[in-house]
Length: 279
Length: 264
Ligand SMILES: Nc1ncnc2c1ncn2[C@@H]1O[C@H](COP(=O)(O)OP(=O)(O)O)[C@@H](O)[C@H]1O
Ligand SMILES: [Mg+2]
View 1 (tube, protein in one colour):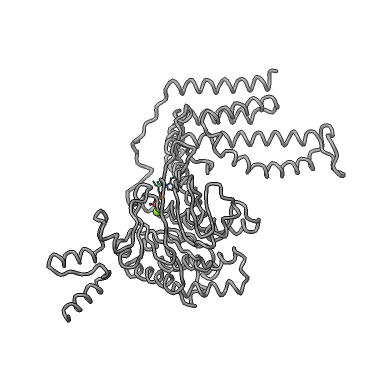
View 2: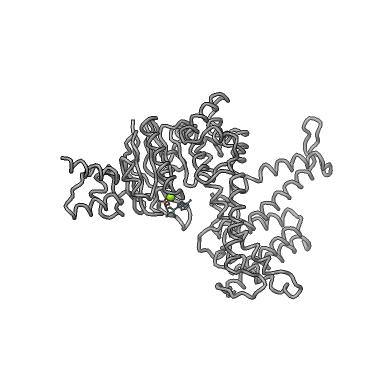
């Protein structure tokens, strides 16, 4: 049981002069039950790749394999819906998809579409709201009167209510304040650790990647140019903007203080120094 | 997905023409279509329209989809006409409803007109960049300034509307994808599923439209935009001999249509 992308290419507007190869022979395997970050410059194809994972786009060539689903150019339309339930996709600025009068109704939209009964839906909505940290008082509030961060939580709850095994989020921290970003990461960490979800996130924030993620996929111009676990990725890779913690560790090294690669937060670095002193 | 009004990037003769040429040609063709009533003229004009579509390379794109949207309307019209129009010879009888020749002919005529009008307007917007189009409109309306017609304002409204068609098309596509991820099947879902999908599409689309309108108005205001002051233009339109040749051709088609209609 696995997620793998084999020789996937995708061309936008293939019939016109504007045709644009957004993905170029992508080969990656994503480990389940981990948090994987997809990073890379704007326009390198992250969003396009992500949409292949729940069949919103079909590859122009190659195949996407998710457990026993195989998605190719010729996949039949009716086979896609189960895949979309299995792989939940939260778009960038997902708050713009809200449309119902109340938070409850909006989160209930997904489960209802998949034929859940009213009782099942109510249970799922409550669970999803709890997961994203929205308390009962939000149930009857209007979606349009919430703050940006709250709206985003509602949007994520709307996907979680489908109970997907794999959760993909496109730049979920874009536009959030630092505190909001950290809460978002803790939400994802909780989903991974306590609810057995596989989490895939497109992001630009290397600090968050370093602290919270397991694996990294680096893309450039439609290609995957590096894939590794977080610790080794940032040790090896000099090309990317280094996370602040690593920069801090490098400064310490210049002063003769060696910190192991396992310290991923300032707090952990300080712990190590303290422990060294004691020893 | 090609949407009515979305520019296509090709470099055909029609794409290169001056927007004013295309606007004028559109008007001439529309007059020809509305001024004629004979089947032979319609066949002649529809062939011309299809040739134009093919030359501009927008035929093989999904203009077919636009036609499909006409099928339902055409069927409704057919039903009404069959019930209401009782002139001409009786072609056949279903149950106790007699179907008259004129009912069928009338439907076919309206349908052909619609196809031609829709094709021509698609042709214009698909081969002309929105900015060029609004510039063309503004230039063509310039003489009206003498009669205090607010040409600048009208041109601004038109150019903003045109500018936002692709923006909303893209936005709609994005929202559709997001709702598809929440289990709506826009393509092959059941009717009530599609209805729910449409609500889930339109509400966010309107919200974003109002948001964008406010933002745009504010952005223009803070940069001191005013329609009452004279403005210079970055783009300058120029007609060349291709434009004149094309206009001659269109006029020729117009005259042929009128001759077919009234002289023969
Ligand atoms: N709907 C679309 N039509 C045409 N080109 C697109 C579309 N969406 C994205 N692209 C192009 O594909 C490339 C990759 O885009 P995207 O996957 O959105 O990048 P990222 O998410 O990494 O910023 C970009 O060059 C973009 O311009
Ligand atoms: Mg993106």
